[in-house]
Length: 75
Image (cartoon, rainbow, N blue to C red; front, side):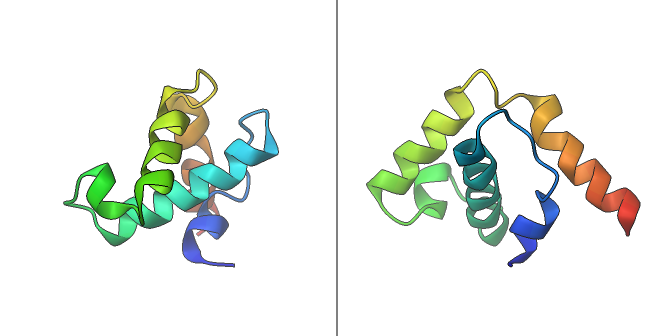
C-alpha cells in the first residue's frame, strides 16, 4: 500500500471505484505538486480519469478532505 492509499484508507465517496481513484489522483498530483493535471498524469486516459473524478458530484471538498484529516489525527 502506497502513501496515498494509506492516506485515503477511510475515504467513502459512495463507490469503491471513486475511493480507488482518489488515491491514484492524490498520488500523481502529490508526486508533481507544481504540475498541471495533464503533466502529472501518465497519459491521456489517466488525465481524463482525473478530470472525470473532479467532475463527479460525489467528489466534494468534504469527502476528499475528511480521510486526510482522519489520517492526520491518527498520526
